[in-house]
Amino acid sequence: MSQPTEYQHLFERPSVAGAPVWVLLHGTGGDAHDLVPVVDRINPGAGHLALQGPVLEGPMRRFFKRLREGVFDQESLRVETSRLDAFLARAVEAYRLQDVPLVGLGFSNGANLLASYLLSGGKHLGGAVLWRPMTPYQPVETRVGQAPVLMLSGTHDGMATREDVEGLARLLAVGGAAVDHQFLPAGHNLLHEDFDRTVRWVQEQGWQTLYNV
Image (cartoon, rainbow, N blue to C red; front, side, top):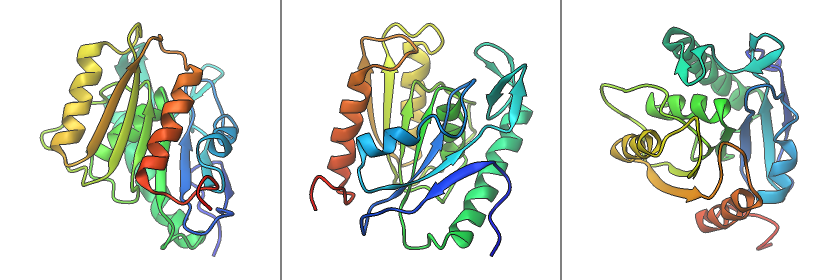
């Protein structure tokens, strides 16, 4: 079967039986390579499916359009959420991932698309890590399912207010997700602590890693 074509992407199977494949979505201005090294750090032995944002804002790649900083183009968000769903469905078939857990990890703009996908009832992810997300939209109802979700927010984030991210955590929880929302003394940037806390959360989920082989 040919590779799915909705995104330019990088794929690598897990090297450890039972380990997940991480679906990686970079932040604004990044590319498909940005988060690949993160997988070896947070979940050794896991695979990755690293996507490249298809939307250009000047020279910067994103996963959906925005009207201005902090204000999302809702039509673009809807279209790109559907694109992600279609891509994951085809990737599961093309890469024979029917028995492999898929877990999302996104930073900033990538985290926002993952949040939109979860709120829309996206069924192809068994969990997600959202680094510095914002609420993508206010759904009439949420259909997340019982996926574990780690949200890491910055106490001094000028883009994502405490009220906004706490609202997103509530929306995900109402939809059925097991949400672990933590604040770090940071802005929109990432700290070493983001990686450390993500490692601990991954281990708590019981996913096979080189830590416990």
